[in-house]
Length: 342
Image (tube, rainbow, N blue to C red; front, side, top):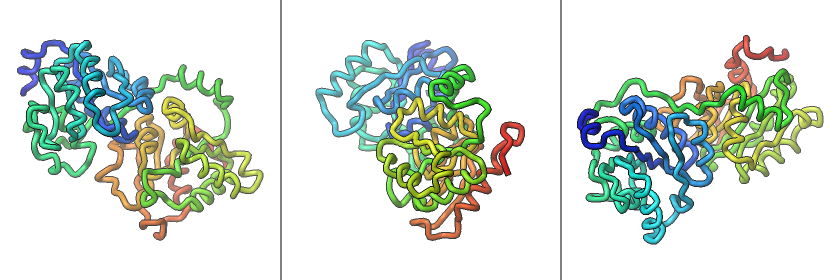
């Protein structure tokens, strides 16, 4: 369906985006939102979100609302699908972009009677998806597969895509700093995210310890970002540092994703594995160093230009040293933004 045909049949009707609910995939879905905003100015766009990911939508100004659904992840429940469909029907969507290839992801939009339901064939979803696209795996990058669903059918893969963007206002960031007790004119900040979904993607924790030690010795504050599962990592890093360095470490694990956005936006540089927090940090515009082991930047990495990818061997057996990572991270900080102690 061309843009003209879509406008003729759907008018100014609202569009529903159904993204994956992993943090990184949820952030990268914002590229599709930006494409839809450019194609259909003035049409409201909502995004389905788990309770975990919903706070991220506050930083996506193109969205009208998040449609929070607790059962969006996990096993298929017909009762939950019917309940969700009733909620969607009341919002009168005219189109849905369904990024996951599962029957579950397409079922509620189908039951809600949304007229145009765009998605890849996936789990043989004939009927559930009526604007079915082929060639999903012609696109190497996962983010490109999601973005292509927001484009007209038969469109060629674009050279440039609008990257995900989490917008943090200066006033909101200043208010967060006051709540957290972080001075505007304090020392430079390096945020590190040692966790990831799977040990094969994690740079060894002892290297993050060495990175934190080097940063603290250079006058940086070190912020450890992550979820509840990273609390032990943060404690291990702190325990391994000398007392003077440990005093410069802040444990920001086990905070919600809205706070994580502020943390990333307030940092001068971010270093992390291939994880959801890497995508989140990249979307705030903060310079990022991405450490890849078993995964690849050109397949799963952020589209954002402020990301420097570095590669190590699986299990961290390669030559990538904490000293090199810190030097590369330090070099990304704009000189006009912060004066880094020598």
